[in-house]
Length: 141
Ligand code: THU
Image 1 (tube, rainbow, N blue to C red):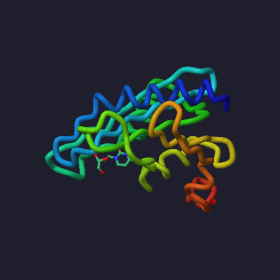
Image 2 (image 1 turned 120 degrees about the horizontal axis):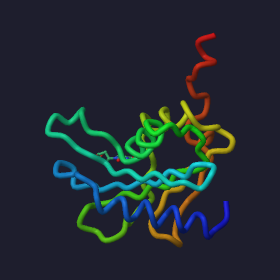
Image 3 (image 1 turned 30 degrees about the vertical axis):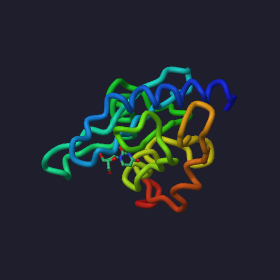
Image 4 (image 1 turned 90 degrees about the vertical axis):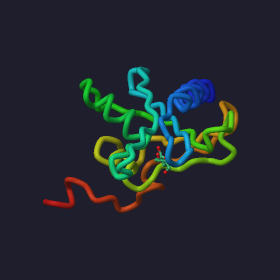
């Protein structure tokens, strides 16, 4: 991916983070999911007083996209940190459940996960590095 495209996606994740609903953890996360045709779907974490009903930013973005007929994903940027901080002070990594959801739709060798501190400060991984040996449809054959 080109630096310019990563910066665009990182900026959208940082914007989405501002919409986080996180009254319980105070940890605000935003995500931006890039489809292969350039379309972007964003998401934020949405918490619930019944904690297990909380959904992460990454899954919000993926479920929005899939529910609108998309399954052709190239990359996802995630930005997370304490709500009262303007920008994340650390690289937030997707949780295990979100990695598993990514593995349902995305190629381990091609799909890029970008953890963002700012538009110019990020770390990039392939999904296969984050979830090696993933359980998938092929595991049940
Ligand atoms: N969270 C995310 O949205 N994405 C992650 O990758 C890690 C965790 C959210 C869930 C919860 O609302 C808060 O961050 C603290 O766990």
